[in-house]
Amino acid sequence: MSIDELKKVLVEDTEDMHIKGDKKQPRKGVFLLPNLFTTAALFSGFYSIIAAMNGDFSGAAVAIFISMVFDALDGRVARLTHTQSAFGAEYDSLSDMVSFGIAPALIVFTWALEPLEKIGWITAFVYAVGAALRLARFNTMIGVEEKRYFTGLPSPAAAAIVAGVIWAASEHGMSGESLSIVMAFLLPIAGLLMVSNVKYRSFKDLNLKGRVPFMVLLLSVLIFVLIALEPSLVLMVLFCIYGLWGPAAIFIKGLR
Image (cartoon, rainbow, N blue to C red; front, top):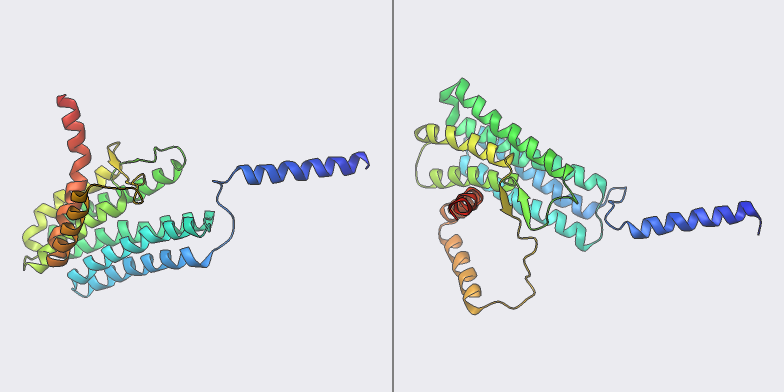
C-alpha cells in the first residue's frame, strides 16, 4: 500500500469515528413523519387565528391546545424513529413561534385588548416578543441546559395559560371586554416569565416505566375525570399553577 493510499484510509476511518461518536449531532435532510406532526401543530396554530377573526374564541383556544399535543408528539416521534434533523429543529421553532407566540397574542388582542387601543397592542407585542426571545434562547442552550429544568416559562405553557383563560371565560359566558384589564396584566407577565431565569420542571426525567404508589395512579385517574367534566376550567387551573410554581419555588427558597 502506498503512502497516499494509507493517508486516504486513515482520513476515512477518522471521519467514520467522528460520525459514530457524535450521536447527538442532528442529521441533514428532511424526514416526513416528525415534520408531519410539526405541520399539524402549525396548522392548528394558524387555524386558531382564523377562528378568532371569525369570532369563535372557544374554537381558537381549543386549537392552541391541539397544537400543543402535536408539538409534544413531533419531538418524541423523531427520537423514537431516529429521524432527528437540523431542519426539523428549525421547523419546530418556527411552528412554535406561530402557534404559541403570534397566535395567542392576536387572539387575546381580538378578544379583549382591542378596546384598550395602544395599550392593548403593546401588551400583545410584549407577549409575542417574549415568545420569540424564549425560543431563540432555548435553541442556543440545547445540550447546555439541565435536562430536568427549563430556564423560563416554556412557550407552550404560556400559550396554554392564555388560551385556558379565554376558553374558560367563553364557556362560562364572560366577554373579553369585561376581562380586558386582567388580560392586559396577564399577557405581559406571561411574556416576561418566558424570558426570565426562573426554573420550571421539564418532566423529561419522569420515569413512566417504573413502579409508582397506588395513590399516584388514583390521582392521575381523578385528573382525567376532572378534565373530562370541565376541560376548559381544569386545564386553565393546571397551567396557571404550573406558571406560578417557578416564582413560588424561588419565594419559598428565599424564606428558608
